[in-house]
Image (cartoon, rainbow, N blue to C red; front, top):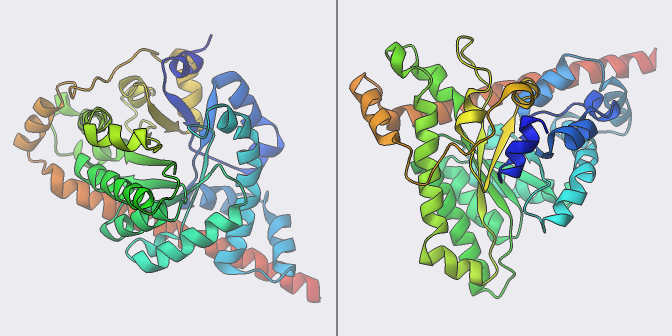
Amino acid sequence: MNKAQALHDLGQSLWLDNITRPMLDSGTLERYIREFAITGLTSNPTIFEHAIGQSDAYDEAIRKKTQEGHSGEALFFEIALEDLRRAADLFRPVFDATDGVDGWVSLEVSPLLAHDAVQTIAAVTHLHALAERPNVYIKIPGTPEGVVAIEESIFAGIPINVTLLFSPAQYQAAVEAYLRGIARRIAAGLNPRVHSVASLFVSRWDVAANQTLPAHLHNRLGIAVAAQTYQAYRTLLDSARWHKMAAAGACTQRLLWASTGTKDPSAPDTLYINALAAPDTINTMPEKTLLAFAEHGRAQQALAGDGNGADAVMAACRQAGIDPDALAERLQDDGAQAFSSSWSSLLEHIAHKALAFTQAAVR
């Protein structure tokens, strides 16, 4: 048994943080499901920007969709959903076997809407209908405006992946939005079983903080933030408030670890996978990290509900000049901006290719 399978057996879901058409066509994703117990998949604008902008794998799809009259964002979502529907179908047996707890793929709304709640709600509704699969999460960033959209989308019964969370406080805001949406459904006599995950980004903390922190604190801040967030997660699951909702039929908004590829070349390549092993959570990881962990990772529970001594690490980081609250806000803003930049680049690549195909057709 490889380490990825062993980690799955500990109760943590392993998802792949990538999707490309060649991965689907070659059977690679199907092999990862079979060999490494991969039970879900996440995507984001940067992933699609690399997949579409840096290869010709989507050229035929762009040509065809352009001829059908699609352009801009609509053309992209048509192409992305072709891939995500295929992936969702591969994960459908897991989705059915776990009654929707696992077996999901994720599609993000336009990152240009990160600070527009009204347009985000409309986009979520549109993309959910367009997906035509029950196991497709629509991703909403956990910005203050996104929190408003999360509550409304959960109330509407749409499965949501809350993305771009960087702190326990941001996580708590996302959880409260989810709980408010579920409570409203219960009050309205609607089915409260609406699935959701909350995605905490980990490694970006260390990329931002290592240059300020002394060497002995390098690559420890992200894990400390994750440990505090896991403590908040376990506290919620143990609360009377949650038990009452669960008894009414609500399902857990699962905690997902994102940005878990090691960025520091001097650190172990399985650093965040080893450190974030915990039951009832999800770890979505790049292919390179997945393969490394399957080969030489450590498959044993690493997180406990008591915070794992994270408070002491956070105190040391504060003393060294890090303001975690301010940094969390900056990381969320920077993350939204990075996705917006990837989005703009992605649409430029698509538009350039579409124009070339159009011009070739009239020659």
